[in-house]
Image (cartoon, rainbow, N blue to C red):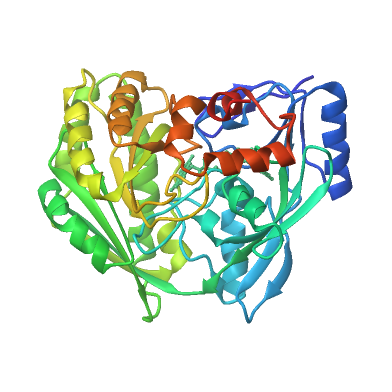
Length: 432
Ligand SMILES: Cc1cc2nc3c(=O)[nH]c(=O)nc-3n(C[C@H](O)[C@H](O)[C@H](O)COP(=O)(O)OP(=O)(O)OC[C@H]3O[C@@H](n4cnc5c(N)ncnc54)[C@H](O)[C@@H]3O)c2cc1C
């Protein structure tokens, strides 16, 4: 019987010919050959945490769970080569044991390394870049079933494109990363007024390492998160208090409330106003990855756009107006982050200091009207959508937003000219 595949957000599903976890490179090559011979499309899939239909296929799904080991460590250069299917959670622990860390991370660590880099997964910090920017070498099985090694010294153009490859260039088997020495972060979470955040955000962002904020729709309340590198030792505070905050309030209670708000969304703003205390602050010092990442158990669907950093707060104010004008109140906070420019052809931060605005809807909610309006606004700012999150753009729009679009397409034509790794989503966003 065919297995059904669904993504984390439960908004995408597929019934592929098979979901296969190969255990060797030879098996990967055989699978590519089998797919090509049968005219089945082949999709490499990680932890299925993308909201967009980027993984959906009725062909073969290949998951590299077995490719999760450390393959080489260069302690002097702080470089590590790992199996591409390792989860970020396991990678972070391995790196800590080696005295290393990734320079920056996103909100969670459940993704595979290959999945995270394929979509340009990012955190925040104007001096920093996405996880993809830390990639300095890749081993890829390509459309003709051959294995290609690429690094900054060997075929650098391929490496550059494959850093954010959308799973369109082949199956990434291993990844070499430029890490940094492990470091602690002092994380401050401040609940304050939205006006206060909007007044302070630019200055805090410039002054600090990693700054982001969440706004609770239909209220004046926002949460400002400021994480700075520190040489101070870990100070985790009370475990019980953290469990109550991270698990009980942010996950269990928030999920229960969203189930209730599904029928009575008009009560969401009042609940936020009663439970969030303006002026409250939480401070914690811990190894970087423990501050960057947290558990997200409440299921939602998300859209995120990257726009020029200088327009970030203006665009946020416009998103706020859209949110306030909707018939149904929004029950999920809006997330705002910033990131430095990079030079990766399909990275949403290509060539410009970037601001990100992310909107979310509880898993059972109807996101269309909300997301469509925000998307129309983002287009006015030349917004580039997150490849792993919801959006409606196609290659006609996207090719105009990425100055090095053609460089990526040249690499794709070289590595997978016949589109063996394609699917309907890639046909829409890449043209074949
Ligand atoms: C709760 C939650 C929180 C999130 N937080 C953030 C965040 O803070 N910042 C952010 O930027 N994004 C975030 N995301 C989005 C997420 O990081 C991306 O969608 C990411 O791509 C998911 O990784 P994955 O391993 O689940 O990959 P999948 O979703 O399974 O696949 C994503 C892409 O990777 C490709 N791929 C997977 N494995 C391979 C391989 N071996 N070789 C080649 N290609 C491969 C697939 O083909 C596909 O194109 C979040 C998502 C969720 C659900």
